[in-house]
Length: 146
Ligand code: HEC
Image (cartoon, rainbow, N blue to C red):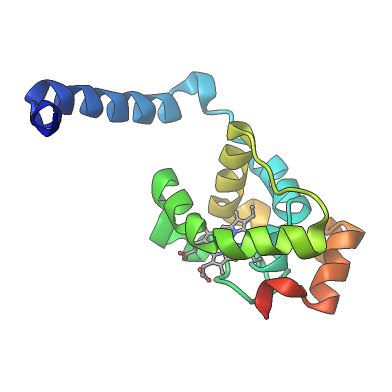
């Protein structure tokens, strides 16, 4: 069975799938990444509880300032790295957030656009934080960091 996988045909199919996805990401039809909306999501979904942008938010995890984003300019790389924070995010959502951090493809694209966009990041202030998020930052997230 393993043999089947090694066949060039499968490799070609996988390559085609990857190229198809890349084409999809860069095609004009879906290039509606909205950094302004990403800014709102960054605050509302709670990224800001652990990551800062423009010195707003906590420094528990790496700052996601656009100036740091050369390490993750590529969307797949960005989300592969984000996966590392997943256990803490899940603990946090159980303990403090009271709702599941949930994303649509569009949400993810918009957050990615926001972390790349220095100009929009410069407009990110404490005023963008919903009260319940501000509260968690002020109190220090409970269960996530014990
Ligand atoms: C409860 C804390 C917490 C929350 C909330 C959180 N993260 Fe993270 N995140 C982490 C930790 C911990 C890491 C891994 C260590 C590090 O990079 O500091 C990480 C890593 C990342 C990385 C990789 C950074 C790098 O330089 O490798 C990205 C990108 C990221 N998170 C994005 C997000 C986004 C977007 C959100 C909101 C949807 C989010 N995170 C919410 C804790 C969190």
